[in-house]
Length: 315
Image 1 (cartoon, one colour):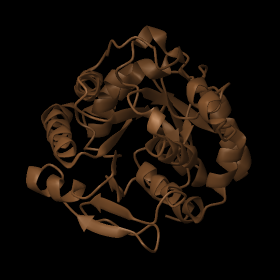
Image 2: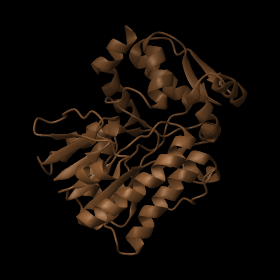
Image 3: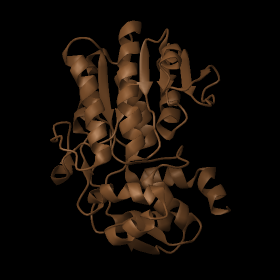
């Protein structure tokens, strides 16, 4: 049995598709899980409850965690450490492997131009501090020999299964598809990597089913030479056959918007990712598994061809 906890998000959906290369015994866990594959087993659960988490993990050989708690630093500080502590305990009792899907919020903001698995950990914000704490909890258990686990890290992501929670989707794809101005944070002049969700799902499945991958941190495959904010907007507008109209939201404006919008308020501490080049290096994974990430233009084409963009444009 291979179990995905947090199965309803973009990564969970692509991971469930990819896991069929390895097994048909897949369990999907979330508050309201929905089948991705015909043979998926569904388990509704409140994963903040130890007892329900225990039921979710029971009988699993591999547990993948693609959970996304509400985007609020206080919620993260409260829920993430407890959840990871419970998860580690349950996985140790069940003697199952753990694959933790992670982001890069914990990396030093002065080392974002060419991020690798060796990039210094020095989180500049509250959410980053929480991510660093929970990753270290897993690493400590690995180093102590108590847990067989790995950490799979992604840059910001984009892809066809996304309905929300992606900056590129919310600020560029959705707006341009409605022939409105795209939005970008801080500056459109810097390069910004995005991991394609289909690649992330496939790569996470590969890692989870490769015994030698455990005990390590891996960057998930992400195309090199990322576009600048302006190029992202222009390329997407070209594919949608609309004008590349956009507006830039500097920090002072995001702060003002944050007075009325909780997501904008939480985004203020993340603006450093947009005032410099944000370049994600996945060379370790690509070399080890002979994997070529999806080119950005092809990824955009795939998203544009989905019914999602068409239906969104009509809303």
